[in-house]
Image (cartoon, rainbow, N blue to C red):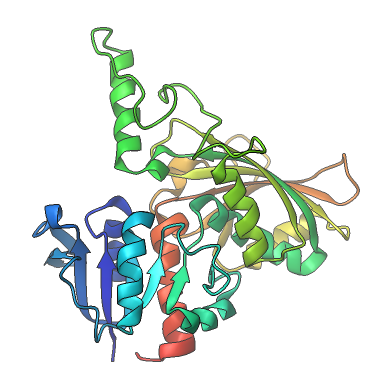
Length: 340
């Protein structure tokens, strides 16, 4: 016996990826509905070897459905998530709307699967920010061994993290570089993204950090341990898909790089590719379409007593969004609903 599953935002990048991953992982689905806004009504989307026509989210009745995977942004989520939750359908939300609500669990299944049990307060579970999701997968097994005091992370985030408009702007500006008659001024991003990097994601806050950086700090504390100190610099880079992160970790206890490598090799959701030779590491291009979070460049930080440096790469449309949502659905099924 399977589940009745809704995917809201099925025509967007993340929604389509949710449908793909549900099919790839053979999630037990008895019935599935693809929802979109009225302007996309009737658009066809793929689910395995099936083609689904999108339904109007405004008119959809969530009663009798087990769970809904939302990828519709915070504004629309504010309207439709409570409607679904009140109808008894558990919402797994990819937006930032509920991440910081104390009554809504923020879940990365490899890290805090038990948090799913707290869904019942609002019938909603939150998916973390894409840059946070891959980082905490790497941090948690190391934290369990040596307790993390402080994390310094610099991100290299793909344009797909800003949606289709971000990808299109990188593509159009790149073509324009080679055709001087074309002019593609920045619209989605603050400055030219082609052949450039932009140290600015989301809005600036009073302390000089951006909201993307604040998200990484706040979410890491909620998911792993509120005592961990985190400082982040988040940068948009001219890459289509795949977020990369340079992570410096300071521990309370000594952790040898060889033991850290062994711990990460055994950790769920992680693939260690760490050869000290040309090309012995993973880059964003190589992680696209994969479920894993890849860890490379593991080495001791000799400038502090108990420090490790590492390089972390993951497909931001998968682990950073759609895959994590599907994994939450799988965890919810095993821990709570227990069908199929």
